[in-house]
Length: 257
Ligand SMILES: Cc1cc2nc3c(=O)[nH]c(=O)nc-3n(C[C@H](O)[C@H](O)[C@H](O)COP(=O)(O)OP(=O)(O)OC[C@H]3O[C@@H](n4cnc5c(N)ncnc54)[C@H](O)[C@@H]3O)c2cc1C
Ligand SMILES: NC(=O)c1ccc[n+]([C@@H]2O[C@H](COP(=O)([O-])OP(=O)(O)OC[C@H]3O[C@@H](n4cnc5c(N)ncnc54)[C@H](OP(=O)(O)O)[C@@H]3O)[C@@H](O)[C@H]2O)c1
Image 1 (tube, helix red, strand yellow):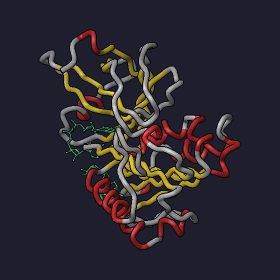
Image 2: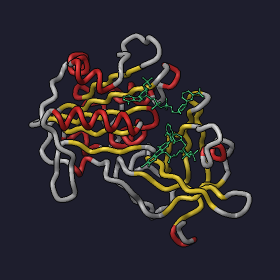
Image 3: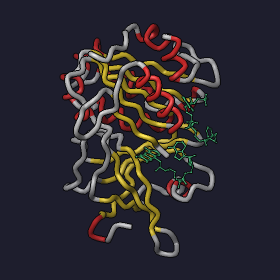
Image 4: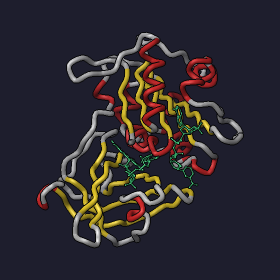
């Protein structure tokens, strides 16, 4: 557990409910808090007995925003989220001063197409990546694939679809392709099979209208650990490698549990 000078106490300033099991919240931001898009924070909540429960949370907001935003699941009886989901505006959440994580575009060299593949709250870091001007400058094509069980769990749709009219990024909207995947019901415009199945059948490339190619494609994967594993396996079987600190590759991965 971090010592007291290793974290700051921030206040909740906004809460958005997406579905019964999904919500987002904004916190005040300590002026010295620094992170790179794609990274995560460690958040803490004080329990009644005075101890603190800590969990990792990907940052949704942009590195230049004055606040910090996070997107959360509610796990029934989850030690952290059963408490977090009860908090109100003005309540306190602790934020470790340290930033974490390697799910950043800095892991890649020379790619032309950035593919971001998410399940569930694994969307969070990709919103932050999409808020960076550098992302739009550095890639010719930017693809976001977002898989959820049911349509009502498709969060941040207005933000994603609003990118085309965004004051900074709108001029790059021709570069952006978004594919929702809804696996347990039909939704117009969405595909309905799991990401690795869509990769194997070629349906994903067909729907996006862009070919995957190790020369051009750089792939970020975030969400359900089994999805991350299965998707990574598909890519490594097809000539892609995971980026390492000493050796940049094609893939950057993050498991949410
Ligand atoms: C690097 C990293 C980044 C993360 N970012 C986020 C984030 O942005 N948003 C978020 O909601 N969670 C995120 N998590 C998960 C988060 O740390 C907690 O696990 C989550 O808040 C649940 O905490 P809990 O104590 O209520 O349940 P836990 O005891 O931590 O988890 C219980 C079970 O709930 C399920 N579960 C946990 N997290 C999720 C999830 N996000 N989606 C679906 N099922 C889940 C798993 O089956 C897990 O075993 C992240 C985890 C890591 C390692
Ligand atoms: N209370 C509620 O209303 C409610 C609703 C939903 C979820 N939950 C709970 O929340 C937890 C997580 O739910 P979640 O929906 O965020 O996460 P999830 O189970 O990871 O599902 C999110 C998306 O990931 C897909 N997926 C799962 N495993 C995959 C794999 N191995 N490869 C590729 N894709 C995969 C799912 O497809 P599939 O549909 O094919 O699995 C779905 O499209 C679960 O424990 C669940 O019980 C509760």
